Amino acid sequence: MSTLTTPRPDQAATPGPAPLSGQDSPVSPTAASTRSTAPPALRRTVATAGSWLWKSAAIILFLALWEIGPTYLASASTRVFLPPLHEVLTAGADLIASGQLQTHIAASLTRSGAGFSIAVVLGISLGLVIAWYRPLHSFLNPLLELFRNTAALALLPVFTLLLGIGEESKITIVAFAAFFPVLLNTIAGVRTVDPLLVRAARSLGLGSLSLFWKVILPSAVPTIFTGIRMAGTSAILVLIAAEMVGAKAGLGYLITNAQSSFLIPQMYAGILTVSLLGLLVNILLVAAEKHFSRWRTSINA
Image 1 (spheres, rainbow, N blue to C red):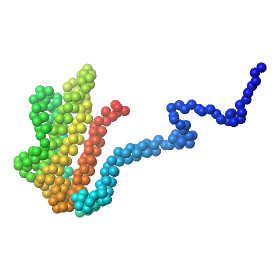
Image 2 (cartoon, one colour):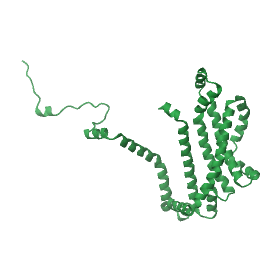
Image 3 (cartoon, rainbow, N blue to C red):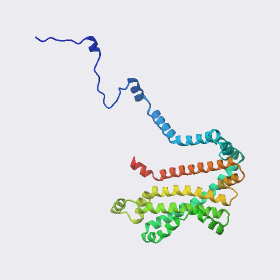
Image 4 (tube, rainbow, N blue to C red):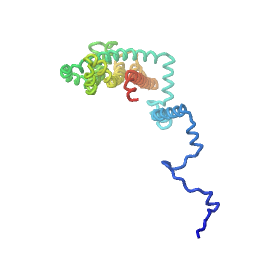
């Protein structure tokens, strides 16, 4: 005869361990409900803020080291030549209040903008023509490689002797420095278009002109803008060096004049302005690239 055994009260009240599916520890109902009820907009805002904070951490640490290092870690003699960040910012604020910094920025932007525009127009136009006609590319490629490997600043004395120390020599040296990145990247962008796209377009009956405007040029836009961004950086850097040689206004003149006058905080303020100006130019060019490459974004999405 079998006997039925009933579990003791303490055994019945204590359930066995429940299996966990893909988790190391059980999630409390409060945390789960909080996570599930959090607005999506709030989660996106928090994620965006965390991403920007992480991307800016290196710059924040650099600026903090710039402020703390000369003040507490460096000697007094070193602080004369490397002032802390707050002294540099104060000197920059004084330059802004007097209007000097705006005058120098306007002079540099006028020269670099003129040379950069000339380089972009000529570089893209000639690059498309050279890449489209293969015999012309094979004929000019050795000469282009020669000029590409010639430093623009090495030719600064030549431009100064031929054009003088006025605006023409500075705009020309900027245009020369920015021309070859645009030209060579335009050629590379056109010549590296996927051949399958070209065959598909020809099978659909597109002529040479329609093929160029609807397939070749849109596919080469990202590579062309890579050259434009490189040209923007080169235009600013070369111009600053040219203004240090012979100019009466501009950021390069400001840096050199402050260094010779032993106005060290103003010198660093000019250098910091050049960095911020280059960053702003790069941001604007990236935005322009996204605008002209919207079709690539929609396809990837």
